[in-house]
Length: 370
Image 1 (cartoon, rainbow, N blue to C red):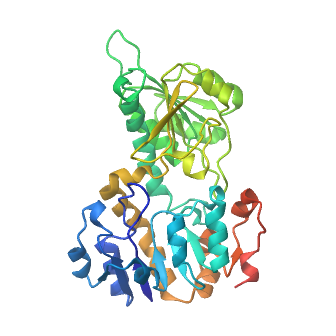
Image 2: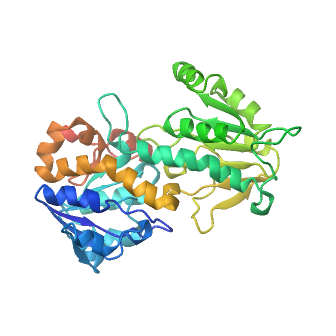
Image 3: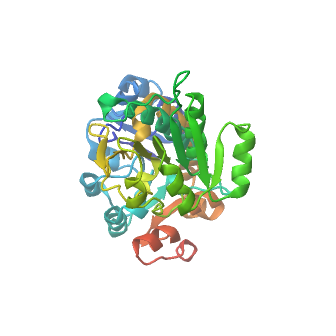
């Protein structure tokens, strides 16, 4: 199969979908790989590093997109829709539940699109989302700590405190991969950490993991509202696979937070859990203020640590890319449940039920098409 690796064009998205190690695996398996010129530059990977493992380099994005399968990192932007065509296999993060125009463009062009975030194993784990969730969770705590500094618009709180002065209060909503990693870093920084989750069994696991060093609470509107009243940093870490993120924090709850507190919502690429999230931000202009609270709403947080993120992502995705490249797509989807679950659009139809539900569009069962 001919595989294209385009350069990401989203604001400050410095990741590349496959580093030379991943490209080498595909070429060793008998496939051809074309990499767009400077696609790896943001991750400190040269074009020469790709050619050394057998890839070809093109300075024409149209040629890269003309390959049989295109592997990206982030969802295609509107200026990339012109490259869509019938039969193209697109393998990337999509987050279509919060992006109706992209879903409609993929269907109109009859692109077969598989979303990293929806590839799901039999145990319901999300192997292609997990590494970026780990990174985003860890970043959320350190970014929140940074924006709590007065020059960045925060209230001037050191999360660790000092002897005689209180620690910062960090509230993490969601106890999954993102929330656990956020809590680990916040706890390591010396903050007073509270994790809220709807799953009591998960709260028991977290209590054991942190050996009682974080507070765990059942997530409901009352507990969230009470915790936010004294929060310095709130981290949104809720995921409903395939669905738009639920609005769990109302404007009134945010208004009750102390002035110059900070919100970091990792779920913003799925629509966000805060009612006060008015728009997605970029690394160039990452924050805005609503109800006196600083909101950090960057949808591609791991793009800021591209070297780490590129290799972590490739470690997870390359084995699935080899499966997709090795056989006709119809056969792969029949044989591999995880990739079947990850398919969002196929032959012009929206085949992921959760995405279709949230977008209000017609859902077609994939097994009726393959």
